Image 1 (tube, one colour):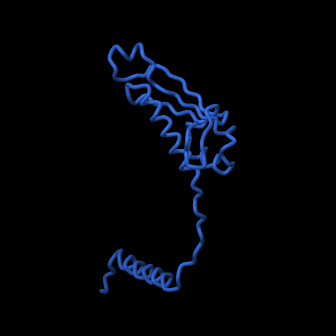
Image 2 (cartoon, rainbow, N blue to C red):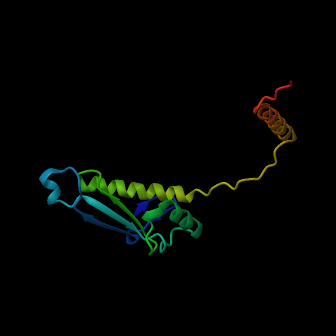
Image 3 (cartoon, rainbow, N blue to C red):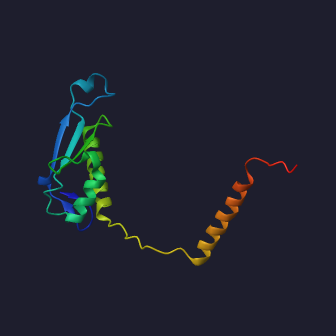
Amino acid sequence: MLHVTETLAIADWELTESFMRASGPGGQNVNKVSTAVELRFEAERSPHLAPPVKARLKRLAGRKWTAEGAIVIQVDETRSQARNREIARDRLVEMIRAALVAPKRRIATKPTLGSQRRRLAAKTVRGEVKALRGRVEDDE
């Protein structure tokens, strides 16, 4: 059971962990110990997430979202398998928490009359400056 918030928890059957050998530092140990973690969360089939949350999660996950509707997180940052598991689970929890927050709707507003007048006055001044550029005519 993976606790996301006080009210939301992800069941173990929705998570799949697989371990493989990691690249990078580790000396001879890297060739024999499977420390890299691949955490797979079946987000599309999850009964715990509402459809709007799933849609936001899909957008947040980006390339981590598979065609089957699962989120795949790969971690091979540390030499410890347990620490990599922890990091992968933390990343998943953070992603789900971000998807739970509904974005505020933008309320369209009109510019004030004063701001419209100031903008037009600035445009007029700028136009006059630009009109003064160019060739100087001889008055002879």
